[in-house]
Image (tube, rainbow, N blue to C red):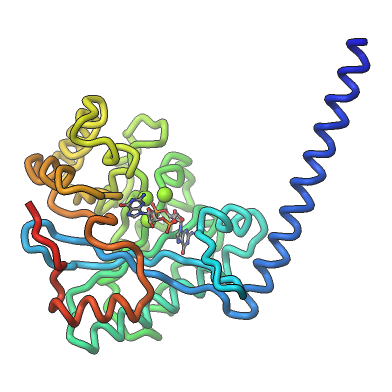
Length: 286
Ligand code: C2E
Ligand code: MG
Ligand code: MG
Ligand code: MG
């Protein structure tokens, strides 16, 4: 009987696996089609300086719009894109779009804005990455020092020589380098010494339950201290309440993003926001 059960379990398992694979292949087909048909769009989320209420920059966040208008978030398709090489055309598209958009906002007079772009670890395997980034900057006619690349902590922890070379070369050209989702990876932190990092972005999971959660409060405080001691900028992600801003301001973290200020929005809506409030965010902070 045990044997029978075992066999059944196996059968169910392979069926699930088959189902998963079919679903993935279907997804892949649709994603490839979406890229060809230019169904991807870049949304932008403002980054705010709490003290001045100024919008100091944007983060580019890709979305996929299906024919019926459904919006698909990057968490749904970036992983599969990374596994299949489709991350390359997607990243090129995001880089071109975001830098062209930055240029447009600069033309409107918002010349201080920075643009942050998420870079997948998989892209770092390409030896042309630095050249491609520099080429995109030149074409868009924006200064290199307005661009920031965000890499997740995992990329730093892997500590591969080509990654290190990439980071130094990026910094030599004046491009900023942020560690995204900081604090969620398991690491010794020693890597912070070895990389030319300009900012740390505290992961949303630590911000979410502030100020009530004692552990998160301690972790956030520790990350802020760490960044300060290493002379690295600190940015808080996922701010949704005034109380979170108060907590961060009291601990000398002055910059952040989150739904409290603005959700990621299409470029036109961001343009309207910038023009209507002259580069400030229309909410009273602390
Ligand atoms: P991320 O870079 O850490 O981006 C922040 C995510 O948090 C975004 O999700 C954003 O919409 C969300 N967020 C911002 N503020 C709040 C808030 O107050 N509350 C909540 N609940 N969420 C908030 P999104 O746009 O779904 O992106 C998810 C992830 O997908 C990004 O995380 C990034 O790792 C990846 N991603 C997005 N665009 C790209 C891209 O162009 N290339 C690559 N390689 N990855 C991308
Ligand atoms: Mg990011
Ligand atoms: Mg993040
Ligand atoms: Mg994330």
